[in-house]
Length: 422
Figure: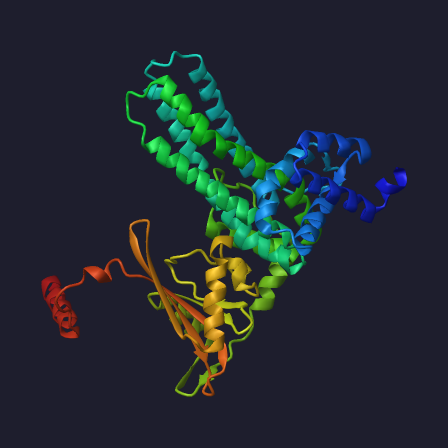
C-alpha cells in the first residue's frame, strides 16, 4: 500500500476513483474513511489535477458543481496544509484570509442568534432579534467583493499557468451562492415588524442557513485548495499586479492596514515608464497620453476582444459601469462572463465571425440605472473579421432630456454668469 500512496499518479487515480464513488451515490463520510485509511492526507494539488482530469474526460461542469460540496465533505480535514507557503500581512492571500475570518465571525453571530430563537416559544415577538440578524446578513453580502477579486484578478493568472479547474468550478459555486443570497434577502425583506419566533426560525432555516453553508464551503475550498495552490503557481510580479489592482474592486468586511511591497513592483513600474511615441492614423495623430485621455473621457465604456476571442483593451473612465481590471487582458472573453451566459456570448461571436451579424444590442435596469450594451463586429476594408467591440452606456439621465439645449445657450449662460460676477 505504501507504494500506492507514494506514487503520485496512482494516488490521483485512487482519488479520482473515490470521487466517482461519491458521484455514484456513495456516502461522503464512507469515502472519507477510505481516504484516511489508504492515503492519510491528500495534497491539495492532487485535488485540482483530478477535477481537471475529470472534466477533460467528459464529466460535465454541471455534474462537478452538483457534487462539489460533497467532495468537500469527504476531503474535510484530509487535505494537508503542511507545505503551504507563508505570506506577510498585506499580501493578497493574507487579505483573502482576513476576509474569511471576518465572514466566519458574522456567520457565528447569526448562528448564535438563531440558537437564541430556538429557546423562545413560537408566538413570542422577536422583532428586535430578527432585525439584528437581518443586519448581520446584510454584512455578509460584502462577500461579493471577495468573489469579484477572485474572478477578475486571481483566476486569470491561474489560467495562464494552465490551472483552469478553480475558475470553472468556483465561479459556478459563486453564482450559486449569489442566487441563494438573493432568495434569502427576498425572504428577509418579506418579514414585517411583529414577527413571531416560529416564523423567524422558518425563514432562517429555509433561506438563511443555506447561504451560511455555501459561504463556509467556499471558505474551506479556498483555504485548503485554492490559496495553497495559487501560492505555488504564481510568480511574485503576478501577485504584485493582483495587489495593485485589488482596491479597484474593494475588500470584504476588512480594510487591509498593512502594505505589501514586492521586490518586483518598483522594477515593473520603471519598465512601464517608457518614452511616448506618437500614434499616426489616416486622419491625424495622438501621443499615447492624449489617446488614453480621449478613450477614458468618452461617456461610455469600451472593451476590445480580438479575432481569437482574447480581451486586448478596455477603457478606464472615472465612473465605470462594469468592473474591469488589467488582469482580464490576454484572457479569453468566455472566461470573463459567468458560466450561465457563456453560450450566448459564443453565439454572438460565432455570428460576427461568420458575417451573419454585425451588431447586437441589449439593455438592462441595474441598481436603478438604465444600461445600454452593444456589441459591434470590427472588420477591415476587405471585410475580414478583426474582433468585437463592446460599448456600454448609462443612459439614465439622457432618457430624461426634453426640448433643446443649443451651443448658443451655453455661451449665453456663460455671459450671464460673467455679468453677475461683475
